[in-house]
Length: 248
Image 1 (cartoon, rainbow, N blue to C red):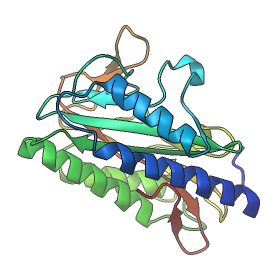
Image 2 (cartoon, rainbow, N blue to C red; image 1 turned 90 degrees about the vertical axis):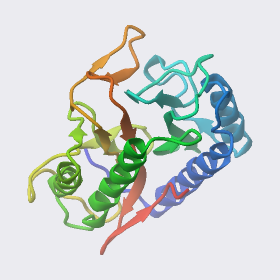
Image 3 (cartoon, rainbow, N blue to C red; image 1 turned 60 degrees about the vertical axis):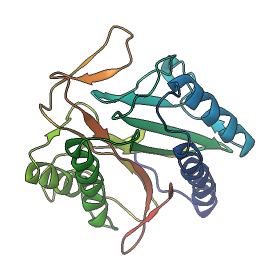
């Protein structure tokens, strides 16, 4: 069931989203060659707790980290470890925070030092696809309209659209209805209403759209080992548009 949030719930989600955005901003300066993903995870954990929230992803479905940290060909759900970031990597931080029972959820892909033009373009184009999807949101928009706009940008740049993983509703659960795919037909799918809160999150690959899961039962990687980028905001549907709740 897709829920319409009350004013009280929206205020709590604004606070949760603000903590997520602030955590991204805080972590960005630590994204340098030599830092381990486990160190980034601890920094995130401490910052979220200091901000008066709890990490949404810790132990969610059994996930062992505070945040998901995915490098290069890893699409999503990378587990924090002793692996060190290297010059030229790209790294996605997927961060969730729960404030008084309500969640914010945002992923962003960052360069580590100087990256190749290919990777620079992938980041720029995936972020462009996110905002193209967001641009059509308002009361009365179909979910299929969002995916249509995301995939239109992906097609323009010949990027692979991951279809097995989708955006979602957000509220007092991290994952709620509706699913928000990064592909679709205009005028199809559930209709968004003012007061709904959803996460839109394009995951675009430099090569094939095909993916598979590693033996750790979490990390999803591209089938051809080419890089993937992931950009996500939690937003509130308004009468004439949308409000980003996870501003960085």
